Image 1 (cartoon, helix red, strand yellow):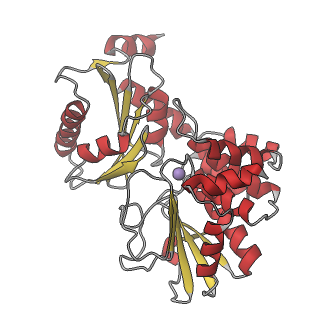
Image 2 (cartoon, helix red, strand yellow):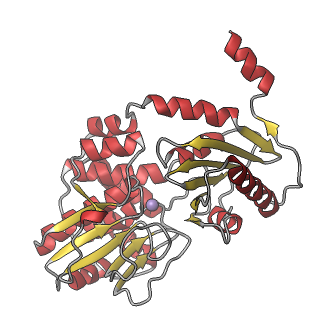
Length: 362
Ligand SMILES: [Mn+2]
């Protein structure tokens, strides 16, 4: 099928099964495989692990362990795990044996996004992030930053190997791609669309709808109103500050929501999660280099990474005091304004205090 060749050639390669053949050859020397993804796995990580699990078990018939680093908080992601019956081993419970190969998906080593042992040997890295990690000495590396989702790359492997996809797997891979490609401008290539099309007929549409429309907890609405009440615009930028986040991924959801505000080009949201300030940055610009902007903003304080339109980061909090937190926020705000070339100015509330009070009285 032409689509298969297109996907396999995403990296300019001519051979239609080169990458997956090489990956399988490397993994075949081991008795089992452990699949890792970044902390707080998202649908792209989960779908990629599902796809590789199926690929490895079908072709090599060796046991595969899917892992979970940190918690999965986002309702849709929890629904994905539940509806698609994913069996995830908490990363701290993994027995690191030399006989097992370790495959990292949707992230790269030494990017501060994992809680694995420092010296753990990684045998393969499959990713699409713009910001790079350390892959020296890793036997198999397939990083394509132009591709919209890691699930697209993994779907390509399954197509190359001509493996039938159970409905739950097709659903997982499809949702992984879909969730990475939302937003405008789309960060996608024809390979992403080709993979999505290839998967589409095999998806369980009811399961997909259940995941997309996952029921939301009370804390979601509380945090949302807190974020809206603490949103400020500075010219083309909107910032939003929340206190404790009920789950780490909420900062990203709020930044995604605020970037649709017609008066801004950049949105930033930060909240506290487990002694860290968790941040998300979004832009409407296709070539916005958001990941590098956020890396500049957190320089010397924490870590960040991501893509052109979307970036995430975190800063370990030294102290819980309100003053220290205020100071950190003010530093980040100043750095953001500088990085985005916005003159120092007073932020305008998205919803004025007067309106907030009036709303309470009605
Ligand atoms: Mn991804």
